Length: 235
Image (cartoon, rainbow, N blue to C red; front, side):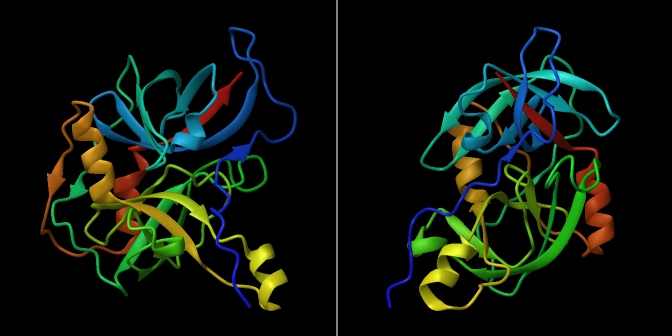
């Protein structure tokens, strides 16, 4: 039996409960995650920013600031946002292009906002495959659990370097209908090399690092915390 190979559902989340009105009278309709990639520059997914009349970013300290989309790439599913005030320290990308199967990775983001903790959530897992669904060469497959709202969050190695941007998870319901079995922990991230190329194409210089001592997942989370933001889409 052929498996469904449609695009996995994106991980942007609908706004929980009653959407709150912004000062401009707009309503929060969905949410996602972003992270600081350059001074006053935040990266997230295209599908998180798509169709938003305005966006806000809630910083680690709780401040909420406006964010404006300055570049988007639907094929890569990436977007860059600009803020007028400092959103936090820049998260470095891994300089080396290679990511290995079995490599341990950490996610950091805001899944299921309004249902789970209002603060960020950390999960751990491994790189499962070096391509996404249908051999999508722009993505990698990971076993770290992700949920709606994780979209646009950083995927980090154990040295605290970004190796991907969380984007989607396998449609477990459709796979179960086709095979009778529920797949577990089949999730996807845009490769860090794609994110770096996207930034450079739009005149933004990424911070690249290599080496460094291995850290615990908790230590990696502490690095990510100050640089990862909760995004709201307003319409």
